[in-house]
Length: 454
Image (cartoon, rainbow, N blue to C red; front, side, top):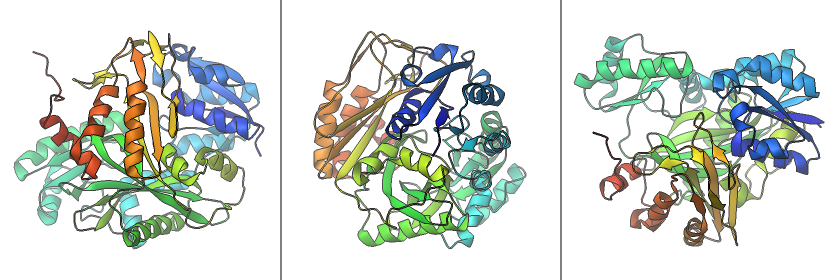
């Protein structure tokens, strides 16, 4: 087992890794920018090293500074969390060259699954259903148009080198294609350093369902059930739950088996997530694989009783996976991502938290790095907390989430707490009648439509 782990990240996920390390009796090193000096992950780590000014490129993406921090403090492994360098194969390789263990999948798996066109082809070769679309990145808008004519409109353009909604555009007809292709390519280039775009048939109102997988270096791969992630805005998830309210036992088995089959084909090690789209007829299609721990991992932890971060560390240290091939799921869990943002405009709301009181009580978990008096810097993602509610069934989980959100107080900055409370009361949400267009319809039918400045 490792003696000291450096966490190459910030915020609540960095603190979450520290908590897992404490239970495993592993020392921790926090790295931070000058803007994050007062974050809780810095406070609770055994050691902390400032690695640069606020800008991510000068701090959390600065590979040489992170490696120097690991060498100075004597760390023997690095946990990347999610975001930043978590899916950077080159970073994982450099760590190996510096005799530092990488807590994550192999660079080869990261590179293969990070190339979305190659990932789609790998899934298809493994017998996992994929949407009709281009097999390779598209050379230009003209090739995109030819591919769209073969697939049939509407289509969706996606960045070949990344995800998270960046470099993604829905195209309804041929007249829109060239402009949307150029926009998607420019956005992908800016976000990932690669403007390559591929194309798929667009499902109008699918559900977004992902399966958590774990693999060890001895060839064993298992799945720990699914998460429903359909409630999103601009392809960014807002609410996740486990299990999905729509999957039948048969469909769950089929999707879980497909996720495991893909992970086995690529020789996957550590924690990962295989994401699918599910249509109205119960047909599912591979979308992508995330080669890291997910923001929404707590809902799986709550319903399975397994600590995924501790498993990441154990697997990276070479331990065998001692869990059954299908881990039992008990009860229901829902997670709300609480962002520091203007709920009317969906724009970040950095600033000082004047008053803070987080909820508790039966079935409630809060992952956060903030507190009363904390200054939310403007340089990073606006996520400040994740509230997870657990119940014996979905109805109890919703009721507990409503109570938790009512008792959650954050003053001094705008947050999405009130928006989540309204979603919990929405009849369509409560019935489980949701899709990836839920938020679009929810905002159209309420006063939540973003305001446009004159």
